[in-house]
Length: 362
Image (tube, rainbow, N blue to C red; front, top):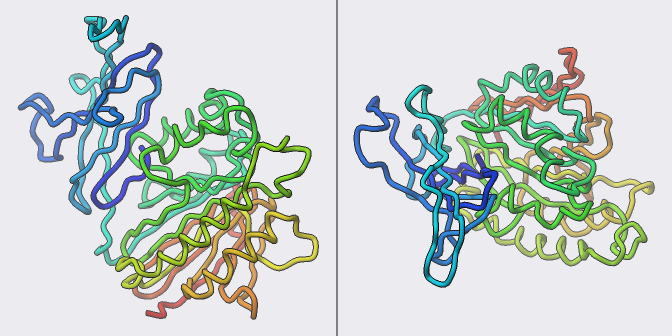
């Protein structure tokens, strides 16, 4: 699942043969999945069904705070000559006869409280993910965020799956969306340009916002950490321009009614916007371009990773909001309600290494 929101959700999957794909959707009303013809949502581009091994389907017209059941289909395309398409008679589909159908729950901006967890800098160490999820009580959390560097480099799609997605799909990602904040390592490798085909494929950008309960989330994409001209990038990147584009977009977010009515405003980015003479170009560019906009938005907290070490930075004159940085060995666990925004960092061994509380200001 990707980008589950109050009124829409996206389903992404890979087939082992070139195929057309679609999703059937059913309400969680106790009826059999077979009780009637279910609405079909196709993997299409401009009205034409895509023939591919990678499929993404946006489900739209959903109701907030509602549980839906779904089933995915892939139908192999054997050949396509002119207007004649030859299909395999067999269709691969999610089993809803022997197994309970997959389901997901849409977000609800009107909910009185919410909870979320966040992990980052896994770098392909899939074996630690179940431990971090368990310590973060993931089954009870509304939202789960990946805050960058889940892998170290992407040369092929298998890097995503072996590095973290196989594990996450088994544990939660078929019924709860991981919201992905890209890190600098996901920008590296010949497959990096395919990143959005797998994550956030049906929204315009890799930076986005969402609202669950009293919290409005702003997810930023901080790009790479060295100058665009650095030898490591071989002249293939323009992250300075990309960050400038995001800074202009940030100016528009404050006009969103969901932002204006939120009790808490939490930004998420892989690289922090803290001040330091030891920072590299990317961090300095984020500080210069993002911090003034986040200051003007009066955010309550920025949550980051990147440094593989825990730290907390109080608001100052340049960065006028608190910044929490999670290590590569912990998980951020948070709840928000009328009493406050409660945030902890918990290590794999269950030790709570940091705990902060932010009172409601609105």
